[in-house]
Image 1 (tube, rainbow, N blue to C red):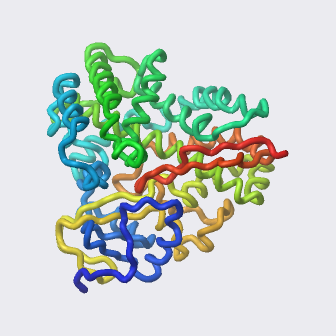
Image 2: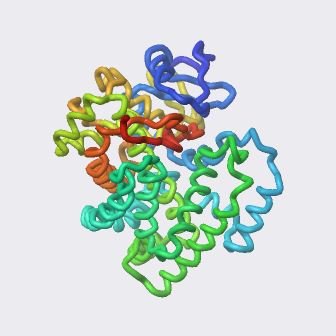
Length: 426
């Protein structure tokens, strides 16, 4: 095994890039196991290595995932500022949560072994095929309302007009959030996502200065959890609470942690799958014409969209023992950045990977992870995207990007757009 050494390719895994795919290719070809000394992070970019890390939780623990997402970029901030202190004060007095307990509560993406299995068994009750299929009529209703302005020939922002409201509304309905609170729920969602993924970091100093709505969200969710403990309903929170038995029971803060995770993961994946794939189709008119002429290929289109421009670009793992990847020694306790976006563009697994192609072999796309941490909401995201494109595709061949149409998210973790304006071709 070889010891860590500086790489001749300068690469910061937490750098925000408008187009990361060229550097991914260089890393795969030249330094597939890359070490950044300043960050003390190893980056794994080849498909086979990504699958090895994700499929070996006994060696590569998920405990680093939640911590790394929150901590990334924290060196840009003074450790104690008034907004930070106000946030933790409100966490104690308004939400009645111990900050340390909340930040260290069990979380599906940051647990391994039996604890992860028991938690997943509980929340899986809300994501069975029958329960997911039951949401299809409401998803169709929401999508039809969203695309109505587009069908009338009005200028349309795919992100704000369709890609954002569909998953936000569905998650609110799943959790049993009252209809009159849906607007608040959307506002809370924006701020929670921005604070966790860094998508608002440049405008909001990593969003610490606007964490007030996050407190409002936590207060509302704590109230909702307590209401469901007293009087169950047919929503996801009630399903989770009803499934708990004995030592597997989740505390209120753990349920709130799961709801927060669902809000981020459930929104971001679907939103940016729809946005990124729409953007890609405008650059691949041949694929757009084919699918528009044969809507039965929409399922393949969605899967290829997940591969071509992966919404969640990377995950994190921690080594539980000395190990090696591709002959490179990695000591115990090291952080591994696992690049899903690079794995999905690895020409060793997907020939001609930089081209959108619905005819390629799409088995093995790794956008939702792999192994025990495979995303439990994957089928819901695919369903939402399929229905969205069933509505979009008849219109897209007539449309072009508007002037200054695209605005990209400022996030190292999520690859997506803040704006994608389209209009009818002249």
